[in-house]
Length: 95
Picture (cartoon, rainbow, N blue to C red):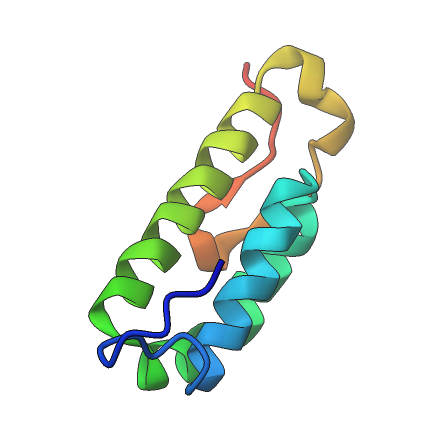
């Protein structure tokens, strides 16, 4: 449910739309898509986001990094060639 208080900017910026899309992507567990959205929308998001949106955005980035760290375990060897440098992680299998 949206909070329509005066300080709520969720419906007024491009950042709010980008953030909602990213949160939905995370809920589906589509971290590979989330990584692409993080990379492609980073500059626009940071230019228009409120402090709360920036905080939520960082939480999403951290969540994506944790998901990719999990995939780096030997069971994730199928993803060994996927590298996502823009969010500081790669899916290379652990040696």
